[in-house]
Image (cartoon, rainbow, N blue to C red; front, side, top):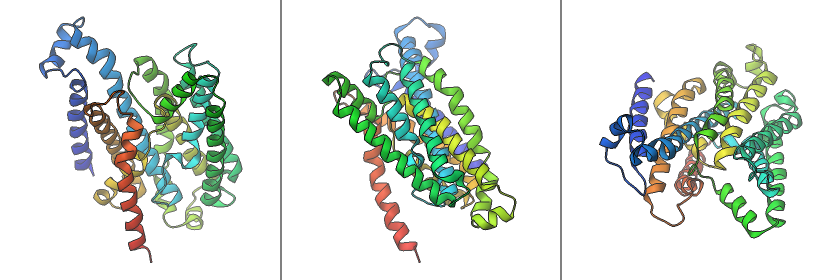
Length: 328
């Protein structure tokens, strides 16, 4: 597994270099060295103020989505599970949409992300409460509660679009919902970073419990696993990490679903061993997708959420067909 992590790390380094150079204005590789010697040059401004925060945000979002997808697939023992399962993505979307609808996002660039994180935390708290905390009804009740909360938040987003005060607000809401990391600044990166790190720590702490859960909930409890505590770690970790990044980028799908499946054949099917490589693979996938989206010259620029959906849909169909073939 260490060799796999090393390979993924090297690929991420190459992707980071490519991300700093690629765009509508291509930079020569020598420009990266010149940034240190001429911080006031045009190349330095492009790299440090535009492409560097975009690259860091892509790595952060991809890592969070990959890790949360691996944890949720292990927790629910469902290969189709992904971060939107608990209503966190739609909750963050509703919070950000409310900020746009009432004009709060125009007051300050941090208002949208803060409202998005509040929406994600509220949605996950409701999911945890409705699902009995993972203790009554097990993971199935938690998943059903997440589906119910997702439906409610999706209805709220639809209402906001239906009653948008003007076409510009509706356009801004739709643009945000499509998902993008373009035009993001260091302010937004530093805003979500503490919450994302806190969520990642909580999710990483579930590794041993997820291994025990592969034997079944009753067997895991007999080994001393507290299902309510595990569910709380999963829900809180997902809410903090995915909610934070979604509040800035909008909805970006399929990374959390695809990354763990790409890694699992190389590390076996122990959930704990999938977590770190899945986060690295998620970061690499999202950064590579962002670079590819920049290379597709459209006006306006192709949204990252749309691009990941286009690439992820064939994988989703393949996964469904594969599951049907191996199912008893």
